Image 1 (cartoon, rainbow, N blue to C red):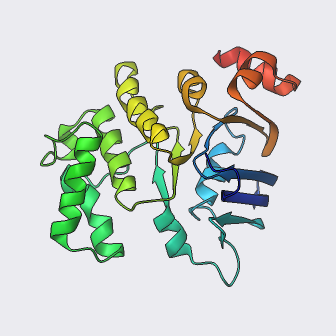
Image 2: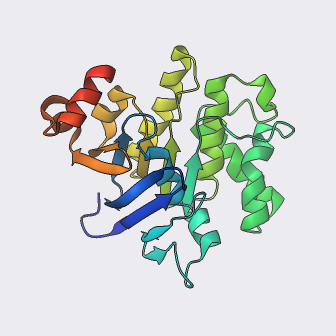
Image 3: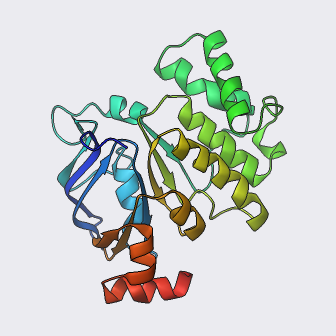
Length: 246
């Protein structure tokens, strides 16, 4: 992990939905190669924070930098930042009418103007990388939930991102499919990918996370190494939440 290159720099991030203030001045930095797990109760702002990093949600206050590039203001290049931040959602978001190979190869062709031959060759390598080398011609409807999520990870990787964002990537999966997705994520950790993960998979947290962030009511309540947060949390709100999931 790089000690001096900040890949994600969140400064005073605010998001006001009118009815609720989802983010209340959040500050967080993530170094290159670091894995940060974000936990917290429903409605705590976890997913809003993650979605703000590639402008799926627009901040109402504060600033976010991705590898030094601003997300807010006249100098913001949203397209560039979206290319650099791969996003994996809870519900896959694959195109149902396109094969796994087509789902993966489409964005590099459309956004980066890569030839169909090069893009499909890259897609085949990525399918191999996520253990689906024989499923390139399969449509999402022919794949299990775990396989669809692995295709979604491969699709995000096809853009060669600097940061991978995972928003509860296993919560929609049957228990027996969770491990196959977590194994792919663990491989990315070993390769040095910078990752921010919203998840309550404590096994993954203990095995892979450098830091755990606990959020509640739009604020970061506590940050620390997994063993410190899980076994010796300082804040009562953190301890109360962990009683329900550990």
